[in-house]
Length: 384
Image (cartoon, rainbow, N blue to C red; front, side, top):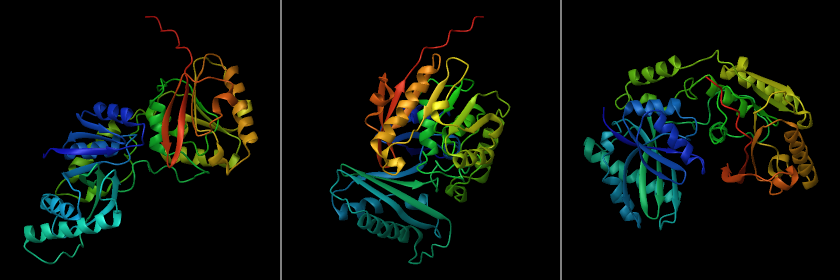
């Protein structure tokens, strides 16, 4: 199989987690930049990464890169890339997204238009034809310009990887599935340990944790755009990657995963989503206010995305502060627990009455948030 450079975009702040995921599925990292991790792999790597990566946004197949400060250089650089190695004669192809940072070329629509013309020019020569019906399979292209360096890649994923397929029922401002998975991975929580989300909404943290516990690959039950690219990725490769993922599942694992929310409709949504994810037997959801949070056992974890200004429809600061105070009081009643929460509420620590060991800047969509970490004591090591 041909060897490619593959690029996996992710949420800003999740690069280290994604890097470890890629290592874990057996591939070598070639570079890490803000919001992107690149790695070497073949067609099988494309399938396995799409099916198995929990924190990536998508998997891109790099076509090439070049320097461009003018539209003429952009045209010639795009035209010089070996498009005929990737695109069949009847391919439907277009620049789906162009992003530019600190580059002289910054108009997405102009970049998209010029690159499309250059690709047609290249393929016209390669296929010795002026006719491109574009009636075949879709090949969306993504372009990044950073300091006038242009990176061009085919999008092998299609719909973003955060869309696992289980979240049919939503509540206001849900956290993205891949971000929830990444935030869990930034904690010492591991399958088998207690996890509670007291503001669970549609259940994303708890469902993602259950999928990790049962080793259910996040993309095993969905399709990907490049499944149609049979000349690059044979159907047998996709079948093999799915079979491998299914064989690794452990659906009967023991768990203690609990989600609470004061809104009964959110709890109903969470239960339906858990069923769709195939983990309803591993989780417990209940309508309960944060003030009623309790657990008899030690060394559990709270991981949560509590409401804040943007997520409460512009609620009064006093209302937000009171909610965080209740969370802080409930946390102090728990014995030897850890707490991790993502919020943009600047008065978080004061309202909780707690000082975080550290915090980490994370972008939740377009909202700048911080991931506050309150690690508790480690449980004693088991003897023998």
